[in-house]
Length: 384
Ligand SMILES: *Cc1c(COP(=O)(O)O)cnc(C)c1O
Image (cartoon, rainbow, N blue to C red; front, top):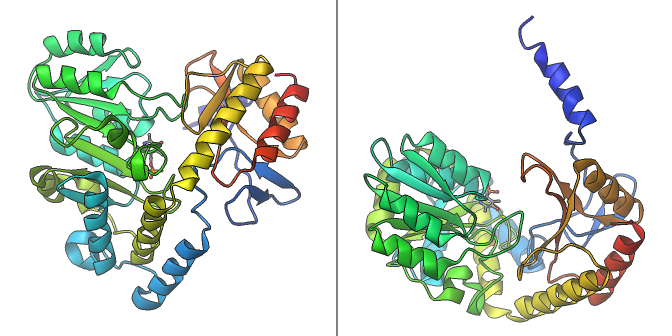
C-alpha cells in the first residue's frame, strides 16, 4: 500500500527517543509559561531580551493594527509594501551599518532565497558543517557545487576554496544555534577575501544580544559589508517579533528584489509586525542593561554548571547546551526537569549529530539570578 512505511517510521522514531511533539502554551511568552496544566519556568525560548511580550512592543503592534489592519494584502512587489516595512528596512540598514536592508517573511525563507539568488550551476557554496538547516537547504537546492567544511575550521575552508570553481559563496551561522559558540568571523572573512569569495553570515542569535548597541557578532568583530557581503538576521529571536532581513550593498539588495524567489512569491509580513519590530529595535539600542544582565546570568549559569560537573559547550552566548549524548537519556532528564517546573528542551538527532543529544538551556534578560539557581538545583537532582 502506498505510504505504508509512514506508520512504521513513526514507531521507530518513538522507540529511539526521537519522536517530536508540541506543548500547548496558554500564556504569553515570558519567563513564566502557563502550560495546560502546569506553570513552568521557561529556559528554552529564543526571546533572549524579553521583548516578545514587552508592553511598548505590544502597544506598537496594536496601534499599527489600528492604522494598517492585519494582513499586508500581497507580496512586497505587488501592493504589500507599506510605510511600516519601508521604515523598518531603513532602520535596520542604519543599525547594521549596511547600505540597505530587505525584509523577508521568515529566516528560513531568507536563507533559501539569498543563496539561490547568488549562486547556481557552475558556482560553489561552502558551508560550516553545523550550519542551520535553512542554510544547508539553501545551498543544496541552489544547484551550485555544495561543500561542507569542518566546524569553525578556516584552514579547511581555505583548502576547499583553493579547489572551488565559479562564484564562491561561504556561508556560516554567526552563533551556532544548537551549540552556542561563535564562528571565527575575522579568519573566515580573511580566507574568503584571499580566494575572492563572498561571505554570508546568519546572525540570528547574535543580533540584539552581542556587540555595542546589540549590533550582533559583526558589530562585535567590527566587520563591515566589504568583509561580510551578506548579513542575514531574524526578528523572531532577540527582537522578540517575527520575520527576517538581509542587509548589504545596494547591488545585493536590488539583486534580491529582482531574483530571490522566496521574496517575490510570498505575502509580506503584516505591517503591524514591522511596527512592533521598530519598537523592539528602539529598546535594543537604548537599553544596554538587558545585554549586561544577560551576560551576568550566563556567567552565573556556567559557573554553577561547572561546579556540578555538567558537560558545557564553549559558548559565551545565551545558548548554553548541556551535552548528554544518548537521546532517550536527554528526553528523560528534560521530563524530570519539567516535573520539577522547568521547561528545557532536549535536542536530538537529526537536529544534532548522532550521540550528541543535549539539553538546550537558553537564558533571557528577564530571568533573575534565583531562577538560574533553582534550575541548577533541579539539574543536580535530575541526575545529569
Ligand atoms: C531560527 C533560525 C533561522 C530561521 O529563522 P525563522 O525566522 O525562524 O524562520 C535561521 N537561521 C538560524 C541560525 C536560526 O537560528
